Image (cartoon, rainbow over the protein chains, first blue to last red):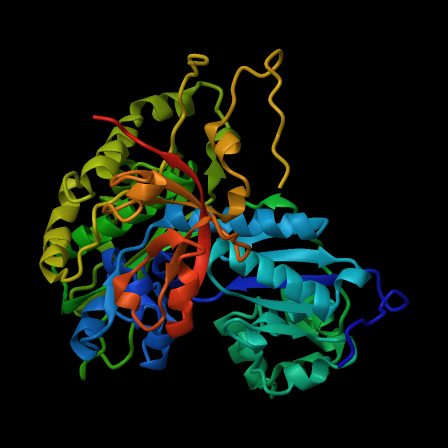
Length: 428
Length: 105
């Protein structure tokens, strides 16, 4: 095996992609040795699986599978609630450790980082050392991919998972792209993949060898950029610092399906509370809301349908009551009584960190901050007593139903400790 | 890892975290349960600052698991006391104790 590859002639840098293995599940399990090796699913409070341990994946449990269904089909699976602020801490640890080893690191998402490796750092030896170091200090595993561009580095980190380390040496890309469906490339969405398939492109390799002019004439610029990156030509750069999330989402399935407007509103309300809680834990505020309800497939309605609604919010907010108020008149209008519905979802967009929320001329945004300060009190009560005590009234119906379903309760121990204190001097 | 020096003239705040942590990224907190470490000055209820590392010394107090008995959870002991047990059991050492916070009353 060649341990040192000299790429200094060919290029001046390589891209490293680091991807958490079953990240949320791994963070939870690292606290509980008795769960190691067992099937664990995270997402109890959202009603769908957000993350699965390798053993749970092996059973066939997939992302977004409803929790009630997992309980029915897999009796031995341990189901846990998620703790986003805990994952955020692990995420920052990952970013900081990588920053010790690479000059430029991008905190791309909660469980992913990109880094720029100099030629002498793009060796198996160096990357293994970084990987061992990250894993030892965090106590969870990551998959590393190294290639000449971000798109290819993502292909590499996905190539061997979990606990993988894949270096795609320039010139050997095709072997990795041959088996890869074009839809699993980073940035190729469902619709684009459909369109590519209709053009006879099934694999990433077939896409790579399409004529660049044809690609840029047919698709928008982001797709053309992916095509260029597949050639080994880097289009993006490493965005240093923590890039704010652009949107945040919560989807919940329930059973039985219903067309009862009050119940649907209640489910949606739970979603909105959930996303707002996550926003507040990161001091983020949203300006836009979109929501959907999803129909149940029945013999009469064999095609699943989504009905949706999008609105701009008056102010940047992370208060569920403000968001519920913004949608209250229009939401009942999207419910088509000819169908029954089995899931609701909400996405908040236009996220800004508190410090970057623009103020308007009349100071109304600031006023809105002040009026909404009480949600922080609610968070404090949640932290102290658990989140079952205070709910938005409209969520109660959905919440009670879920509460009855809950079989695995998390312990009420804290999982993060802080200690800021004044210092009184020495004692002898 | 180098400890940030404290300048009383300019710094009005010293983070207890920085003072107590040797390697912040590898540090976690645990709580002592039971009297097993009484002889080493660790009492029931103490909060332990632990650092994930694979470099433990004989006198270090370490956090370990037994892969054959994971239901037993985390164990705490001195590193040297593990030598004998390790001849029979495949003990994994995860971390060493770096600090301690105790509450009286």
